[in-house]
Amino acid sequence: MQQLKYNADLAFSLPLTNLMAETLQKHYRSEPLPEVILPVPLHRGRLLKRGYNQSTVLARHISRHMKIPMDHKSLTRQQATQPQLDLTPTQRRRNVRNSFSCSEIHYRHIALFDDIVTTGATVDELSRLLKQHDAKTVDVWCIARTPT
Image (cartoon, rainbow, N blue to C red; front, side, top):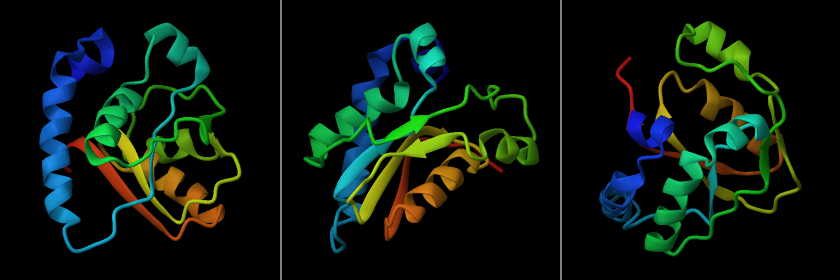
């Protein structure tokens, strides 16, 4: 994941997302699928520096595989936050607080896609924001979850 995220090594993105899509299809066998996939956005400065958003790359593969639309424009990261890597859980929550914005959405069931979920601070903040914009259900999808 570090090679994908920081070194543009996208070789594993398709195999990882194919495995994830298989798992998701089993999970949602008897439940309705989300109507859209929203990748966690990067701040414009970080996107320009890195050249791509790894969550968008991965979400695009999942979107195609599962035939669920992906929307990478409704969420934006307004503030260039400090990288979360070396922060404590409390610092992570403070770091992302009010750092995102959401355009007017009409989705009720959303899959929020992040590459790696560590403390959950980012997805918690985005889920809160989406529910303020009338989302009823926000499912969090990620390739990796770090141990607590």
